[in-house]
Length: 119
Image 1 (cartoon, rainbow, N blue to C red):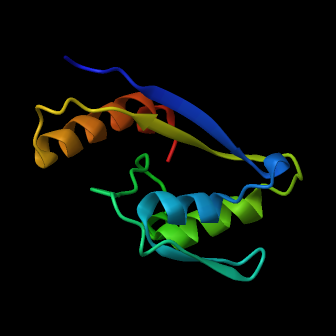
Image 2 (cartoon, one colour):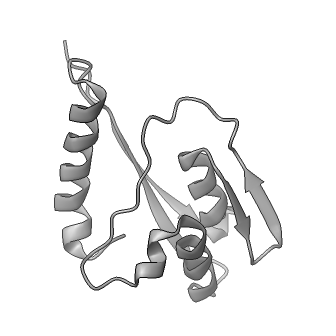
């Protein structure tokens, strides 16, 4: 039986959150946050099957680099209550193998977010 799970959360500076830290955690990697001069290192985190950046056509090529992308967002959004990003989490059917799950997730994100101009 399929179990439905879909959750969207706002990464907001007002809540004391950092887009760079959130991206490092989700990708299980280390990213340096230029705003606070700190490296967020989650490279020992397990359970991340796949991580990639999808961007609309015409986006700067430099945004393919996760650290550059999220530091530019942090720099651009200057307000103390800035909404920096959205964290979207959803379940995939267990019947899918890894490649099928990645393809399904990629198609969904492309259609529902990237097609609307979101990275």
